[in-house]
Image (tube, rainbow, N blue to C red; front, side, top):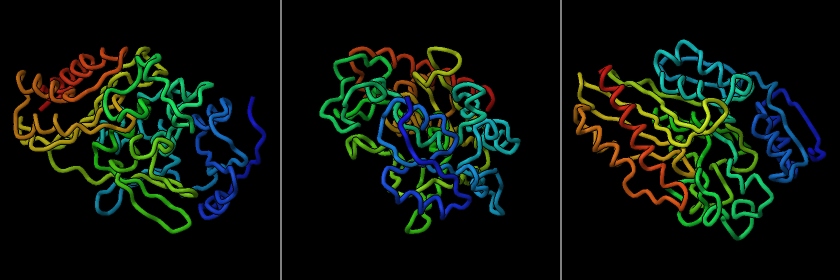
Length: 327
């Protein structure tokens, strides 16, 4: 059962920010995550502020410098199907098309997708876990087959549920954030918070701040991006293992690149080890195998999720092989 709450639908961004000063106020965008949190009583809410009428937060446009602007309220379906996204940032289009089901992609927004709350069943269930203010991460000794193999820090072992966030990190994107103190830009690579830094927070958003848009710089010549996701079921499920790639080629040689794993950590997990393993090299069988091993170096699986290590290796090998063929 939903809790009782007030509901407002301001028509301007500033009005929405003002409403957020009220106790227990939360932002409602597409609502595909928020409504589940309300139904499950994950956190106390007294006021829901719908930003759906703030028109400036919608749409996709290219700036004069080639930067792509995606309004935070732009639906995932729009991102997945937009011609410019598909042409220049195919990995992001792939990631958006892999989120949940068609119905949820029609409603869910890219801003909401990067700001999701954890999907850990202990967090979503009747457990007073660390992230909800308790003293225990129940996943440590519990059902942890879907939990993280990196970044838990002995604190919280959830995995970040977003498919678009890893691609945005790989593409060196920035989130524009508005709040009472004005506007600031946050690189997506620094947008999410590891549990060892603050176990109660998923993002760096301060109270009364709202993500207004995503900005992706123009890709360098020779850059190709992709996203590959493995899940238990073909639809609806979140990633068991996934990889976002943004690699710059000179002929068949990888000049530079960014590699970000999904389903691996409490934040989109950038693999500097794998980037180093492929930089300056052609993607032959030996290099690809070495890169896959590098990607899982230092992994610390829990009792029931050790299968993720060979799964990540297989996903990475297949995706690098596919990219090498098209080089």
